Structure formats: C-alpha cells, structure tokens
Image 1 (cartoon, one colour):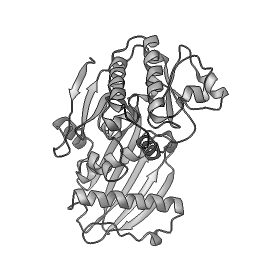
Image 2 (cartoon, rainbow, N blue to C red; image 1 turned 120 degrees about the vertical axis):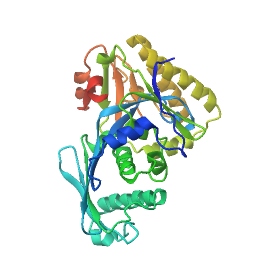
Image 3 (cartoon, one colour; image 1 turned 90 degrees about the vertical axis):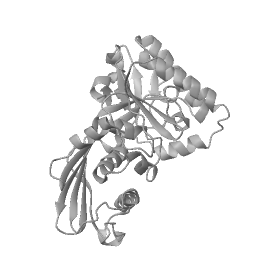
Image 4 (cartoon, one colour; image 1 turned 60 degrees about the vertical axis):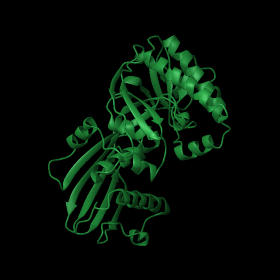
Length: 344
C-alpha cells in the first residue's frame, strides 16, 4: 500500500475539510471586494475513463494553473477579461447584472463572434449554476471586473475549465464538485487536483469523491517526460465514447486498474513501471475499443508511452532512459517537458 499523507474524503452534503478551507482563505486577498484565487492544473496518470465507474486513479497537480482576480466596480456589470499565457486578451465581454444578481442573457449586445459567443454562453451557464447553489451570490448593487489568467497554452489540456470552475467556486463559496457537475461534468479528479498541492489518489465511492494525498515521487522521475500531441482532446466527447462501450466486465477491469495504480505509486524501478504502463494501456484500449497511442503513432519508440485522460490528444507520459526530445521533434512534436518541469 502507498504511504497516505492525508485523507481528504468529501461527501456532497458536507463542507470542505479544515485543510481545504484554510487553503482557500489563504488564497484570498484581505479586502473582501478585491480577491485573487489560484487553482492548479491537472494530469491523470492512471484510471482514465474507468475513474467514472469507481476505479482508483492516480492524479497529479501541475506547476501550471489559472488565477482569477476580482475587483469591485460601482456599476452593476460583470466585466470579464481572459488572458492567455502571454498576457494577451483572448476573450473580453461585459455582462449586465439584474437586481437579483443574475447575468442578463443579452448576447447580442456583446457583439461577439460565434466562437466568443460560445464562451459567453458558457460563462452564463456557470454563473446560473452558481446562483442555484448560492442564491445570495452577487446580490449587491455594485459589479465586478474579473480577470482570469492561465500560465499554459489553452490547447495543452491541463484544466482550463476545471481551474476556472474551482476559482469561481471559491469566490462564490459553493462546492466546486457540485458546480462542475452542473456545468462541464466529468469525474471531478481535475477539481481535486486544483485543490491539492501533492499527488493524490482519486476514487468515486457511493457517488462521492474520495481523495487521498500520496507520496508519489518515483526515483526514476528524471527518465519520465510529457509530450504534447499537438491537439486538444474534448473530454466530454471521450466520456461519451466510453459510456457507449460494452462494459460487462467493468468490475474486473476496475480491480485490475486499482492494483496497477497502487503498484505504480510504490514502484521504485523504471522497468517495472514500464510493465505497468503497458498493461494499463492494453486494458483501457480494450474497454474503450481504441488503439494505444504508441501503436498508433510511435511504434518504433524505445520506451513506454501512456495516454493521460481522454485518448487522442493533449499530453502523453513517456518513459525513456535517454532524453527523447530529438525523436519526437523529428516527428513534429515540439512540446516535450521533463517530469520535474510539469509536476508540482
């Protein structure tokens, strides 16, 4: 069994534990009208897809994340500005606030392109869900100037949505897992990563998240790399594909994934870790009726390659005794991060 650093089990009807509450309030500025929040990005090392059915998964928060800065203004307007990793504005819009603190759904006044109108509608959906969870939120005569900033490219798939959800949930004093359920959906492991600064195991037990901080610090981490596949994978589409598959033997699969997760955490040799990676890839390939990424793109690579999260995009985990940068760049994959540069 891995060394468990902290048990942070949550249930939907309970408040956050004291450690999480402390972290949230530490992130707040002292001025109640001007606050700044920050949430960590995420990667799912084991249990992709089957985490939805209760598998024990290993997840890691990343050094990259997203901040949310709130400043009060006198007018009942929510002025929203989103910055990318270069500090460039990629979305901006102003939403009027009604007397009860809801956003007015008048997208024509925003004069947005179709792409940005989709963003505006998503923000409207999020704040509508927040109001359902906390009817008192934004029940004031003033408004706010909101600035979000990510420190990673949006196509990396490290949690642009989950970090936003967690930041807004902190500001609105609502349960981030419930807010995720009412907006983007998913297992919730990304919210757990947003709230934790160490590797965690994540498992859905009786409909509630079970989160444990674990000591995952492999001695061979210098031989682990993350490679971006040059495209972003839509997690919702991946989940829909998984749910459509035949899962007659899902409990047997979950049991095997649970064992692999525990063995990965305790693993102290690269060769043994690679065996576990390959086994995990084969299991998920069968349950999702997909081809492992190594067979699909890198069949001649001397090492193991594992998809992370929804298959088909974002980052993959690579094991290699030598720096594999030249191999991947020769094949058009320019973003290669050593493990220590990615993991918090």
